[in-house]
Amino acid sequence: MTLLSFAYLGALLGAMAGMGLLDHRWRLALFHDARRTLVAVAASTALLLAWDVTAIVLGIFRIGASPGMTGIELGPHMPVEEPIFLVFLSYTSVVLWRLALRIPGLARPRRAQAGAEVT
Image 1 (cartoon, rainbow, N blue to C red):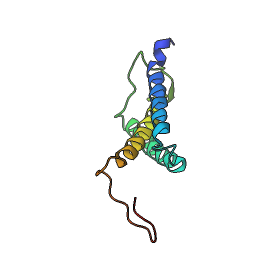
Image 2 (image 1 turned 90 degrees about the horizontal axis):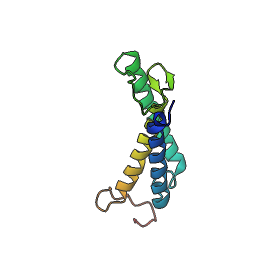
Image 3 (image 1 turned 135 degrees about the horizontal axis):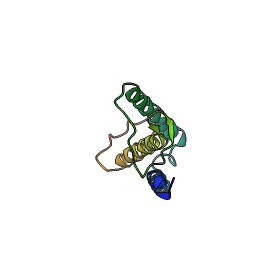
């Protein structure tokens, strides 16, 4: 293995760290409601991993050769980078959804709770 073989994994981890910094700064997802964010990311990651495993079993998904990947497999045709990518994809989706809710006119207005003022 060379340094290049960790390029994709490093890029994923770096991008996830950057997303975490944005999340921290604007309190969008994990830093707004950690429990709900972790549940959403875990559930969507599990669903996407099940999708990948199904594709592998059906022979639709096969690992390709890439000098930017570690070559470490968690199982046949399941590179170690795949679950990390799926966590990043899920986390990014939650952060972007929470950001979209802050755009005026894009989010639905909240229903007023009894005795509470709508903000």
